Length: 123
Image (cartoon, rainbow, N blue to C red):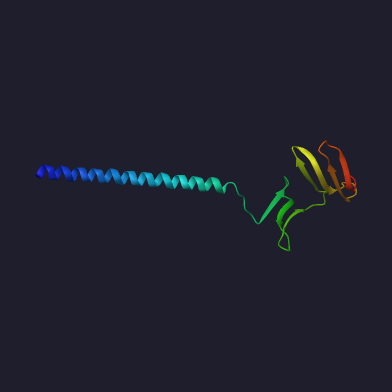
């Protein structure tokens, strides 16, 4: 009876150790997986109050930020003549900006076959 009792205690102790090891190991793998999933999701979003585009000298050339009235805005900061180009399938579809020689605004649209139509100004 002593041997049977001792064998039961040793078997129970070993079973408890193996069970605890499995529970800890399974819990750790779940934590790692959920942390990996959270990391993957967070890489899809960039959140900032302001994004600045700087040139090689560190001068701010453009900024995506909130305007004074609280709405989102794209600011071009320089004495340059900025241009905004909207593309579709690699082709210019609409170009808006300031003419480099006069700084007068212009808007040019392009049809699907690439034909240009000036809406106003010259580009």
